[in-house]
Image (cartoon, rainbow, N blue to C red; front, side, top):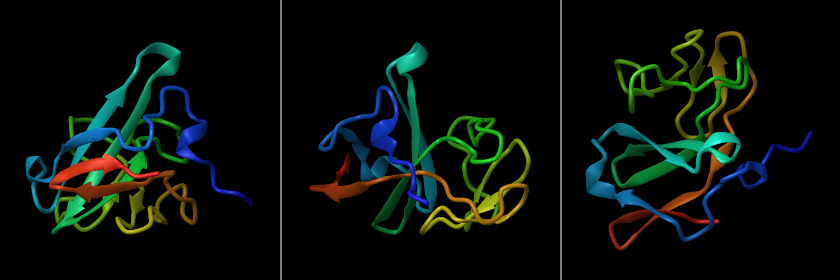
Length: 124
């Protein structure tokens, strides 16, 4: 089974799109980003651990709802996992695999990001 691509989503940002400066994200921390509106709305987030960042589509693979209830609150209290505020599903930060909850074994859809000259960008 092929993993869905973020590029298949309406409003998905193009490679090279600048998201923010790395130092604008707490460490560890997460931040959400919206592109477009209506049916062309693309919702994503990035997680920072040290100088590393990962990005995902902001959608639970179980309920297809945004993961956070409050702005930029994507991580557990220990800040070591991503949490879905709808059903409490837990996801590994490094690869988006659900390890607990109603979607165990499924993954968040990755959005490739990189840090270039201190800026977080969509990388491909």
